[in-house]
Length: 493
Image 1 (spheres, helix red, strand yellow):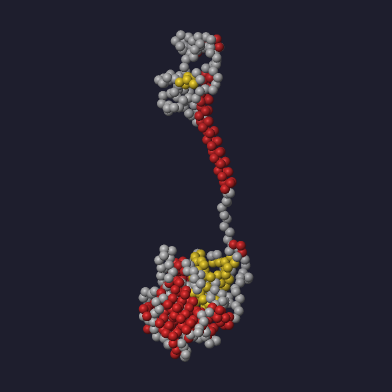
Image 2 (cartoon, rainbow, N blue to C red):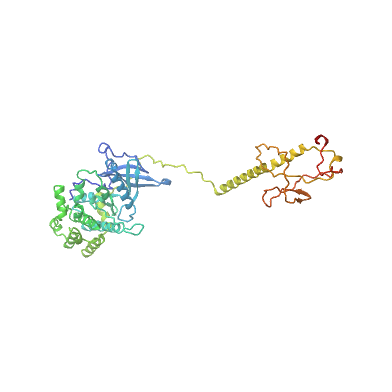
């Protein structure tokens, strides 16, 4: 029987009664919200985090049960830990393997930092070892099946490459019974990739947490040296020892003594703990527990193949069906958790911007363009035509009509000044009385009416012909000198 006296850092996804509020005053109550998730009940509490059973309601009323790992408040204040926790969670979210609990989501909300995992309906290997100790231990075939599946998960993670094709170099650092989950259907899942790395950099620790993890660390890890994938192989060999023998591998009265035992690789041989233990299996475990890094299996895949070879040669069956039957024999039928007692989770509805149909949008665009074009035409007409119309009316008022018999016989060409375009809102000053010199360019005629091009006018731009009908030619002759006839009231002197 495993006598686990350590503080579990990574909680298990195991059904448990609701915790009393007095036991954990900082825990979240049932119905509390954490991001997009609603807490059903707390599952476990460790030195670094709490694990909650929660639910997430998606659109259409679809409900999904998940496990939410919440960083404890005293660690949430450590910026280094939080930053590394979220960074490692981002890496773990990229791992998709049948033997790794999938990271579904992670994030922060205020001072709360959390990690959302797929819910594994079962228990941790730590609980399985305790329960099986009362019934003679875990059958050898089931023990080998668990080790085989965890080795497959480790090999996948160790060889995982990033989007750029380069290996990520992931090392779990905390392969222990509390981080291996076994479902009632015989599935084996490894959890908490990278969490141990973030924990190692925190300034806040809890008494007993380090002691519980030291028993599964590789010798180079307890010495603070650089580690690689073979450190996880050592930890898995420790788990294999405990599964196959039902006893702890490294046991010592204190942390200092435990460090010395792990660093020296001092443990009881499996055959001395359980008589008749297969020698071939003992050799596999001993190679995985080698103190020298180069003497161990070079990868988790090598350890996995060694387990397969032993099972085939000694009549052991690696079967998830047998593992599921063992789980039901130990724990009976455990119903899948539900959230019937919780109030309905109202999803947050964000008002979407108004969507204009393409046809309406095009119609609105054309209408706007037409209105703008009409306004422009009207503005140009007022700015150009109105001043010219006002000038013509002024000239007609200024020169009253004379008797037809007194009109001159010939009309000399009229001197024209350059046209001035004035906005309608601006008063037009009367033209000066000084004579304006006639342009040197010979006048051009359109429909027998003289048109004068003023000096400085752009080339090719002419005054448009007048549409007002001409008066009939007068019968009287012009006075000598060719000047225009003036009525007696306006003659000089």
